[in-house]
Amino acid sequence: SKAPIAIIGTGIAGLSAARLLHDSGQAVHLFDKSRGSGGRMGSKSAEGATFELGAQYFTARDRRFTDVVQLWQAEGWAAPWTPHLHQAREGQLAPSADEQLRWVGVPRMSAITRGLLADLPVTFSCRITEAFRGEENWTLVDASGASHGPFSQVIVATPAPQASALLAGAPKLAAVAASVAMEPTWAVALGFSTPLATEVDGCFVRDDALDWFARNSSKPGRDGQPDTWVLHATSNWSRQHLDHSREAIIEHLHGAFAELIDCVVPAPTFTLAHRWLYARPAQSHEWGALADAGLGIYACGDWCLSGRVEGAWLSGQEAARRLLEHL
Ligand code: FAD
Ligand code: NAD
Image 1 (cartoon, rainbow, N blue to C red):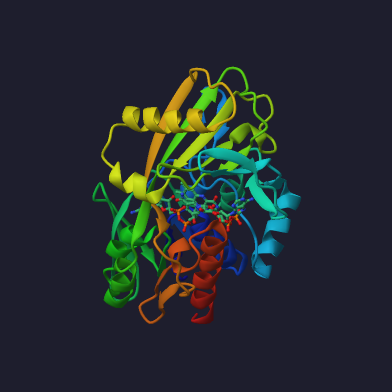
Image 2 (cartoon, rainbow, N blue to C red; image 1 turned 120 degrees about the horizontal axis):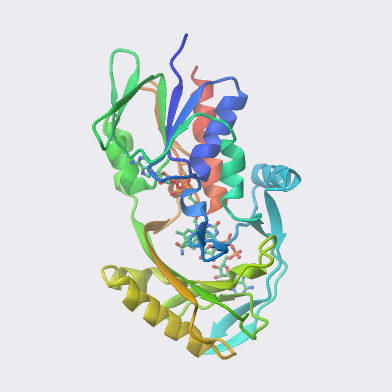
């Protein structure tokens, strides 16, 4: 019988493709260098709280995506988040309510990719370094030198800079991926033993250093957790401070947050910093997905479309659709 399809990356793009292929009767096998699924749409636990250092929420504008988000809601994986939104203007916070529907995973963002993964075959903690094609099939090699395969097709569902190396067997696709610049984001989480005395749940800052901050515990399904806030730096500031220590990053962003927020900020009970090297594509594209159907290799991810959760999901659908069309 035919060899399964390999999918490298268990972020929302890889799982979107995996689900469509599986539901169409194709055997898939997923790989991820991390210990769990989600990628930039993942969650992190510390000190009794779970929070998101990457995607904070997502919006749904394309009909295909709004339909699937309804299904996720029915499964209990996703729910609307209705924060008290603010924005900063000249160092002052002002309410900034709007009508936009914003979604989060419940009780944590990673519930969505975990739900999609279900019991599909997957190998975690496995960084793929190479994909090469033999007479008929593909073989993957991981960072420890071990081989995996054979696979009939390969879908690369990683950020563009990591995808370009994995696409070496299809030089045209590799060149497209290599042309995509992705920007970094420093993210900081702060935990407090007493909830901060503010009604602000989320804030578009767009300042020099701070880009955004949010009260994680205002999201649905996070009741009873310590009051945890997530701060994101702007791409520019993150790039300029890429190699600074975690302590220095936390100190600076915590300071900027404490200065801006309209309440007393006591010393946090825990702090954490994470550097996303490939947080977002510098610009959006309209590629849908990349494909070399003759070779049987495809690439998808947020960088093929809008640089958001919705774009990543749509790109995964497109890669799977093009693969199925060529069977
Ligand atoms: P990823 O989620 O990056 O998935 C790729 C996966 O591939 C990862 O799990 C990674 O571990 C794995 N991988 C990489 N290389 C290898 C390898 N060699 N071998 C094996 N596995 C590998 N979007 C929104 O819509 N709303 C937001 O509010 C929002 N905020 C964001 C804030 C931050 C700080 C960041 C970083 C992103 C944010 N985004 C937001 C963007 C959103 O998270 C992404 O667009 C989306 O999650 C990308 O999904 P993906 O599947 O394309 O890639
Ligand atoms: P969205 O519609 O909530 O936001 C789009 C943009 O509109 C915001 O970035 C903000 O500038 C503005 N905006 C929206 N509502 C506002 C309000 N009430 N007051 C003031 N300004 C408001 O969501 P989206 O279009 O799905 O965008 C996703 C969000 O994820 C964006 O904020 C984007 O910056 C963020 N993101 C961050 C990264 C990263 O690496 N840090 C990566 C991808 C996306």
